[in-house]
Length: 260
Ligand SMILES: NC(=O)c1ccc[n+]([C@@H]2O[C@H](COP(=O)([O-])OP(=O)(O)OC[C@H]3O[C@@H](n4cnc5c(N)ncnc54)[C@H](O)[C@@H]3O)[C@@H](O)[C@H]2O)c1
Image 1 (tube, rainbow, N blue to C red):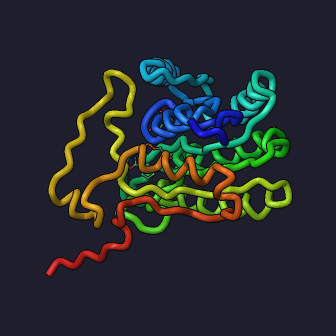
Image 2: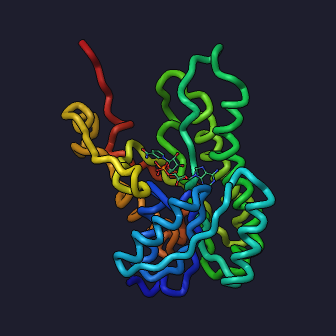
Image 3: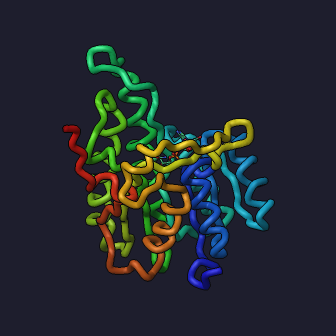
């Protein structure tokens, strides 16, 4: 337990699986009231059961971050049930539809990725604002990606959406500074989430020697790696940090690879 978090209400979008589930576990363990939201109610129920098995509590609210009325209703619910919000974590994101070359990529598929990864965080920040303004140490954390800064071929929507979310981070930080709301990003590299999915969708991690060697730290990341940094960035200990993006990738993006 962390006394700082025992009085705090934290909302995590896309919190039912993967990195979001890892952050929910970490904030609940530190004593925060955690509100998990997700598109997938089955995954939400599964996440609550999984947390309960560790004697941790959270509250689930179904919400599709693309849908403005649902986002509005979500924060109305938070207002009525909790009367406050200290931290918003914009984590929900998708990488699919699948990669396609530019000429074969339907424009709607490009839009679909931007709708979740960029419009979603914008809508959540917008409707969380009246609650965050009233908090003592309010914070927003956006989960971006190292793909905001580098790309594999044919990942147009994902890279563009994450680059946009990096920019939205500093734009929000500057705009909401007068309301004392700090806004930062975590830019994860390769994070293995196979064991953090709902029942029936879990996969055992399998990483080759090359996969591990691509990382200076010698391994692929875990949701805990992201959660530990989120705990710090959303706390008063990070009170002088805003508008920043912390890359957490085991060093993958600073490693040069030459094939000779
Ligand atoms: N895993 C990685 O290697 C990695 C790397 C860099 C960035 N990220 C980012 O981290 C975040 C979490 O990724 P993850 O790997 O844990 O993904 P995940 O697929 O394991 O979990 C994402 C969760 O978001 C939910 N979701 C999807 N669309 C939604 C919507 N419209 N509204 C609400 N919820 C929705 C899903 O149901 C799911 O539970 C994403 O933003 C992703 O882009 C992940």
